[in-house]
Amino acid sequence: MDTLGLVERCQHGDPEAFRELFRAHRQDVTRLALRMLGRSSDLEDIVQEVFLQVHRSLREFRHGARFSTWLYRVTVNVVLMHRRAAKSRPVFGDAPDGLPAVDQKPFADEQLDRHRRVDAFHRLLDRLSEKKRVVFVLHELEGLPPGEIAQIVGSPVLTVRTRLFYARRELLALLTQEPALAALAAELGADAATDGPPPSSDDTAKEPA
Amino acid sequence: MSRNEAQEAALRRVLREARAQQPPDIDWAGSEERLLRLAERSARPTPRPKFALAWAGLALAAVVALWLVHERSGVAPRLAPPEVVEATEPLRKNAEQLAVGARVEAGERELSVDHAKRATWTLAPHSSAQLTEKGERIALRLERGSVLSEVVPSSRPETFVVEAAGTRVAVHGTVFRVALEGGRVIVQVREGTVAVGPIGAVPAFFLKAPAHGDFVSDGRSGSIDGRPLGDSEERRPAPVRAAPLRPSAAPSSSSGPVPEGSTELPLEPSINDIETGFARIVDTTSDCFGRNTASAEGVQITVRTALGLHIESSGAVSNVDFQPPLSPEVEACAVSGISGVVFAASLQGAKVTRMLELKR
Image 1: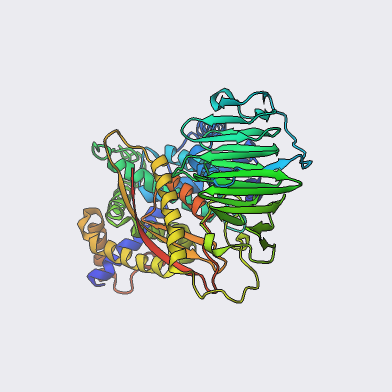
Image 2: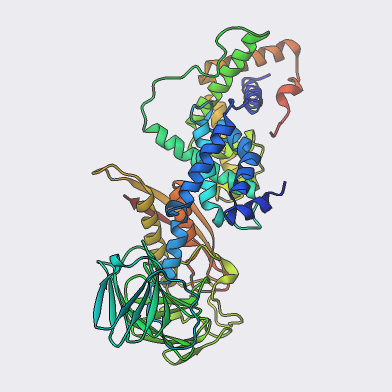
């Protein structure tokens, strides 16, 4: 499917093209929003808001630019706005949605642990500054190169790299403050001590998404 | 494995688990239906939040030159006005009584149209114009004769626009006259500044009162105060250069009215030029912030952000960065407006950062 062709048709007011654009990119937007927010009951609203923004701003999209980069930028901005708005709303505690309530599957404990770790990881992300969190998610979870992130956040590549470096360092320093992650680190350290070096490739491989 | 290595391994593991996290099920059919409905609704009446800037940019460029007059220059108006207001006596009309698209024709006497607290425009005898917009921006299409416009100064960009033949004159707050005379567009500025250029393109000329411009009908060349302005000549009279906001049309670089082949360009834009442009940018951004930020009564919202600009050698702004970012609405609005600001041309351009404090 030719995205730029769709964009051009959208810019001329073709609603069918907008529908196709939505269908083609909604998963990407949902995934990024999820990765930036962790579990959120507002995910659907956010995705909708992103595409409304796209619809309203599409005329400003310049051909020659990458649509996906532009869409990432819109998504990042909408998510950040959502976060800022959410901070001013009352919080009633963690909703347990998304966590399996009962052990219904084999290895349910393992799945539950994984859920907890991912939730803990998002809590750590929340403690990073906005700028660092955004570049970290885009690079480590979305797998985008610093050059593209620089375009998305409108900062020099060097700045992006610096933010990545400090984000990673801060996360490592904070890691032990989350019991689920501290336990994981202890477990991995103990395994390595038992098995001897080096640590399994499973855990050391660098995996851009 | 050391403690640090264990922590790094834990981070890698949890990153991998986070990457594998699956989004929840979403009712895409319902979501799509709602989205298309909302999109259609937002596109229908007023493209305020997103396109406001683009429209505002257009309006800004048009603010100064409402007075394009002509004397039966053969400009063929392809209009299908639903309403014709004709004056046979000296007349004042309340713009409220006019629908968009209405053609206004002056007979033997002048005809004035009042837009309360915003502008008054007066058609000379035997002149006619069509009211093409009367929302946040007032726009006229001068068909024949001349029109004198008095526009109340506003912080909003391009609150008043006159189009005549292929020329567009835009003002913020000023008194100016536009006339069609023998195929040419005459612009006289009594107060304020107007931006003049081809319709649908970047304003090419800026006239600061008192000034007299004589342009060919396409708005691309002519003279200002008797000084000829050619396509390839000094199209931009530096002393009166302001930073125009222009429509969504063409941003940046090559479209700017830069004198090609000039051998006297400074290395960088002057401080004055940068500050003048920045003042306009601050106004625009503040305006965008004010219009796109909800605030409960009595609650003041203040935002501080660093605005970084990359000014090309042509004077066009090629990169705009707010750190921290503003809301998508405000940024879209501001970026669109800023992209129309043109600084003085220079050999190497400049990178500039300023702190902004926006209040609502």
